[in-house]
Image 1 (tube, helix red, strand yellow):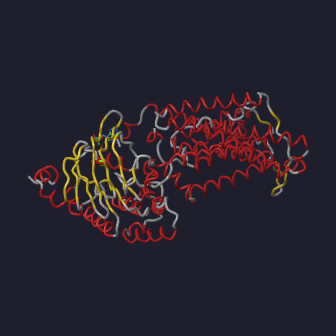
Image 2: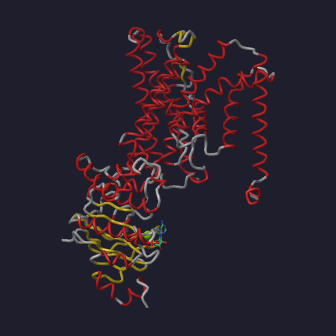
Image 3: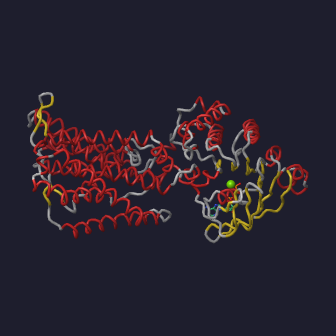
Length: 237
Length: 353
Ligand SMILES: Nc1ncnc2c1ncn2[C@@H]1O[C@H](COP(=O)(O)OP(=O)(O)OP(=O)(O)O)[C@@H](O)[C@H]1O
Ligand SMILES: [Mg+2]
């Protein structure tokens, strides 16, 4: 049984259809990437999965449980955390308070302390800046904070929406290193990216999304050598 | 530089000129008053203390406006009615019968506690009901819609309580222990003013601590910034909004009790003027900011109290104390000209509009 099973999602914004029947699966322990151009529907897919949007049709099944009646704020209690598009840090809260909010769903104080240690080890920068208001962080630091905040929920499945967006090449490398490390420690990851080269370098499998439809899915290895993917997403002629 | 000059419009210049004229008149009036010296020092002290007491009430009520604006970007015009509903109910069902039976004079502390708890519960109850029935369904509507609804809710509650309790002014009984003045550092001060100031300051500090330090307080700040991301953290946004209304209206409920202790009368329309003034105070301090609401409240109370005697007396204006509302709203206009986001407001109003 797959950890996450998305079947035939149809999501609309008013009368505009953004997703036309998305199906995908994520197995426990995997990194699965979802790539696609601007406006393909990647964010819409993630927001539908975590119930911020209400799909008109289709189902989302997490470890065998249909989440049809789940509210967005209940998702984290099911073990799903998200690093939203554009980071979405609480800019008027301090770094430490942002991380606190990441652990909002938990009441195991000692576990939360351990995870805070872990986040500060992963991102020493955040520890240095813990008393600072998040709005004053650089883009890279905000990405660390958004990732750290999601980790504070101790999720089993982490949804990441374009974590490399707007970062310098060095920081992009770091970000993908971090993603690999988080996955090694046992968190399953569904990674939305436009940077297909980097995404395929860490992912086990990938889905290609085009105007609201999955047009291709395969292992990352095979996608890298797929002619259409090379042309459209890897910039290889 | 030229670019910047071109961006300054005629309206800006006119507003600055207006501001400058007002400030000039205020300084002139103040200097003239000080030269004339019409009041003894004791009167000034009393005026200042009365201003702080009045300001405490504004500050407590202003908190409700600023909290709700902070999370929903909406001006809750029914807030003055939340303030009224608690104390008017507690007066009719507790204060008046307890006075008549002699219980209030025999057990003043128990009595005031019961009155306060009742007033808070009723204010909070009315606020939660209004939020659930009138505001929550409109959360995704254009911003004008909840605004109009709030004005409607304000009228609804005014006439609801008029129908329930009648339109006449109801007297709130005197507490013997609070009658007269006490001497602090040799200065005689009304006991009711002392109670109001102490209670308000304690409540404001408590609320600030709650918002800044507790988990629930932090979650409310998170919801104020980004409802979707807050939900991803596991925060129940509807509940956080309800808690926000509950806190603001609890403050208003307490303010109602303090108001009754000072003015010793209540009626169905009593929420209107303090509501508008507290809204002014919240804008003055920077709407959305909790310390701003407190500061705006105290400043407004102070200006209203001290202003007429200090600024207007020296200009030879007769009966200056009838003009305290003019001072209040002139202060608002001045702040909006020179600092549109309010004294402690961080962002420009346009950014959120
Ligand atoms: N709030 C909205 N209202 C109406 N249409 C929307 C809204 N959000 C997204 N869309 C539309 O839905 C489609 C999918 O958008 P989505 O944000 O999911 O794309 P994306 O793949 O995440 O793009 P990007 O790489 O730019 O983030 C787009 O055509 C977009 O214009
Ligand atoms: Mg997107």
